[in-house]
Length: 105
Image 1 (cartoon, one colour):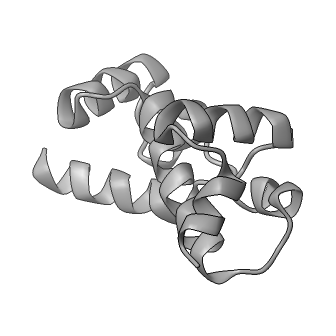
Image 2 (tube, one colour; image 1 turned 135 degrees about the horizontal axis):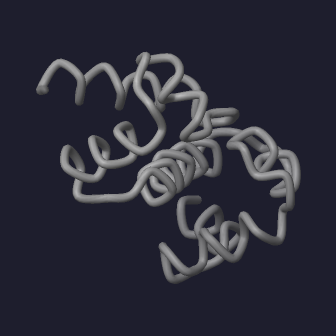
C-alpha cells in the first residue's frame, strides 16, 4: 500500500494538469471507486482535494518564479477557467494569486 501511495502521488504530481480520477484509476488498473477509496485512505483527502492541492502548490512555484499572466498560469496548472483558479487559490490560501506573487517580491 505504501508503494501505491508513493506511485500515485508521483503520478499526480507529474500529470496534475490533465489527471482525472478515471485516468488515474486506468493508469493503475483500478476501478474508479476503488481508486477513489484508496486515495482517501492513503491521504485523508478526496481525489479532487488532493489534485487541487497539488495544482495550487505548483501555482505557488510559478507565482514565485515565472513572470506570466495569471490567466496563462491557471491553464498551466490545469484550470480551464482563470476565475475558477483564482477562487480556488483564494479559498485555500486566503489571498489572491496576484497578492501572493506580490508578497514574494
